[in-house]
Image (cartoon, rainbow, N blue to C red):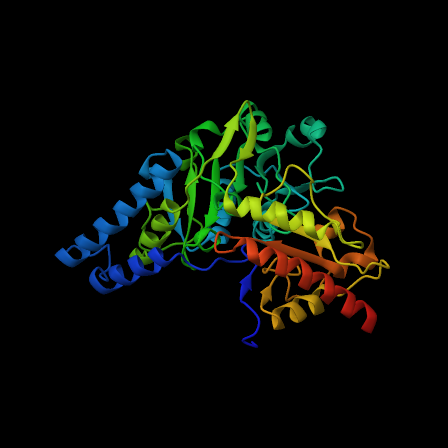
Length: 396
């Protein structure tokens, strides 16, 4: 990268730079507590103590008991364990997911088809929001499992999970949510949510990669049947030697999140932070530019994520992939969609679900901010994106 450009990372929804304290703590644990936490000797016992202290810290962040915290390799494994593990314990029925789910949840749901399950997709409107008036349609028998992404990772829309959760509880339906994108914007009291389980990946909230969590209500823990065999770690539900250092790093990352998601009367709101203020400022600047239009819900959305269709002032669609590369050469790192699917040559199912005109499908840009950015960055970002879009459009 040319040194005349600053390095401005705007892809927090894909991954975040680990917090400096997380890196320091991981190094210390790797150096001093590297033993297998299942070993019976003193070194193993010391490693286990660090692991369980980390579990307690994680539990405290969400006001749950430590026995409700399962440590996994990430949100993908956690979602599969929740969905398939619960399905293992009951007779086949119907699982309902939204039409804008993360690929990991879609894959978990579709894997149940081989075992006699029906999969139904809860359709969304042009903002990516489910039609809540269709509750009876989707939550009537034979629905037994519902999984709904809380904050959509590409377009930012927040789903009404409190309403869905209450209805699922009334009907004895297991409800799981992927909360990965929400946690970086604030912690929450799990007991205030009518959710059976939620999954998350640590690297989305400035923790290390390769570690995640599944937190479940006590009512459902006994209903989970493991989806892999092994040594019976994690209360017998997730076999495999735990990474003590990564689990500790995840707990430290959670402790660095200073704010909480506010949940009152079933409504969820985010506290204002430096990151959310910068996001609003950048969005205001960007959408003043002719040719740029937002995607996702205008209000009910992740407060650090801007999603848009990149077009010139003459409404000429701009290739998002090319725009990403051009901006990267200028020290600005954004995304053309989910990092889990952006390298695959296939149609964007999220944009199709919200019925984006096909000619604009390849012009989707995602900008997700973190607390490492400054006010000076915002001006540079908006100007650079504007000039780069016009440059690409003229050369097309």
